[in-house]
Length: 198
Image (cartoon, rainbow, N blue to C red; front, side, top):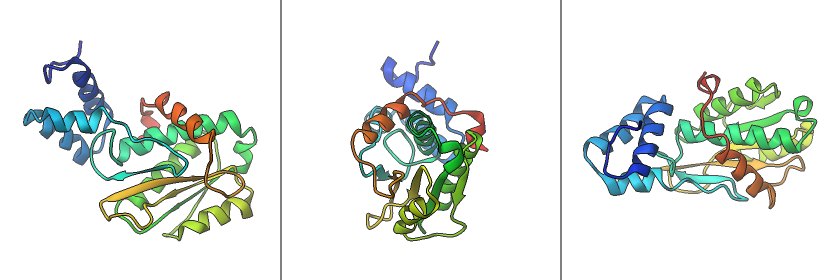
C-alpha cells in the first residue's frame, strides 16, 4: 500500500520510490519539501519525466527527481549501462571501461559512483585521477582498447547542468541503435542496488 502523499495515485508511487531509493539527503529532502508544500505541478515535472538517453548521452540540470541529474539517476543510468554493455560487449570483463570527469560540481563524485558500479559488476575501470578534457576519454578508449568510455561533463552548457557522455569501443560517441538499447536497459535497471551507493 502506497502512502497517499497526493490525490494522484501514479504520482504517489513515484514519490514513494524516490523517498525510498534516494540516499542523498539533499535531493531526497528536495522531493520531500515539495510533497510538504503540496507542489503537485513541480512534483509531476520532476518525477513523471525521465531524462532521455540519446546519442549524446544525458544532459540536464542538477537537482532532485527523474528529470534531473543526481546520484540516483546516475546510479540508474550506470546500472543500465552495465546491463547493456554486458549483453553487447562479450569481452568487457577483460577490456574494461574508461571513466573521466570535468571540473563541474558533482562530476568527481559521479565518476566515482560510475566506477564503483562497473567494478562491482566485475568490470575493470580506468578512472582518471583528476579532471580531464572530454577527448581524453575517447582517446583512452582507443589506446587501452576498452569496451567503452563514460565522461561526466555538460561541456559548454550552463553551470547548473551536468551530463553523461558515452563512447563506444571505437572511441566515437554512440550512435543508434546503441542509444535505444542503453535507454531500454536503464528502464529495466531503476531499482538501485545497495552496493551502488558504496
